[in-house]
Amino acid sequence: MKIINVKDRFPCPGPRYKKLGTGSGEEFREWIIRELKHDPELTINLDGTIGYGSSFLEESFGGLIRENISEKTVKAIKLISEEEPDLIDEINEYIDDAISEKNGES
Image (cartoon, rainbow, N blue to C red):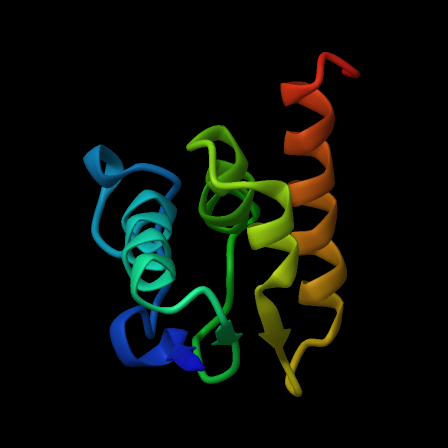
């Protein structure tokens, strides 16, 4: 099982897209995809950053669905946050919204 500590590469999570600045949700999503290819049992520790913007989180996790990562694989990612446990619910909402949009259930 691979553990990603977001703070190690993204201590200050940035905007949605790379073109808008460093530490983007797009860049983080690409990192997640690379790690999933090596080990589908992935844990992501969200603690230790200065905080998250909704666009970063939506692009990172909802974007996985838009990049055709299977719903089963995305839902199997274990999320950890002792500092802000509500982040996990927020991320799951972004994933569920992206699944609904992909299935034409907007």
